[in-house]
Length: 132
Image (cartoon, rainbow, N blue to C red; front, top):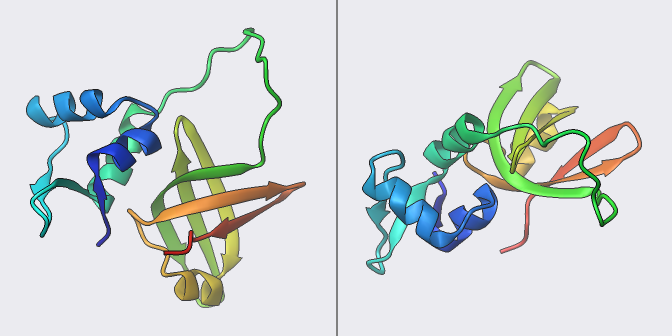
């Protein structure tokens, strides 16, 4: 299962590093030491926590920038049948759902806790895994 350092988790959750550390200290989120001795959060737990704290944006407030069509987030759920897969991605307060072939989901290694990027084009959602 992937693990995320405090700074990466903070970025994915849209909060500061200190907020993530406070959540760990308060027991809302657990972390363990990675092989280098730094705190790391399990990807599956981070994905579940992202869903738990997600909130819808306020309506009626103007936005000074245009919307972007790439959303980085954590996979929170993958449902596969014989041919197709449904992949849920939590990108900050937004839940993005993609339907793709089971083969594509398997090749990308999509499972809860995996970091992924949803690219939105018209009515289609394409999920990518960032290069390492």
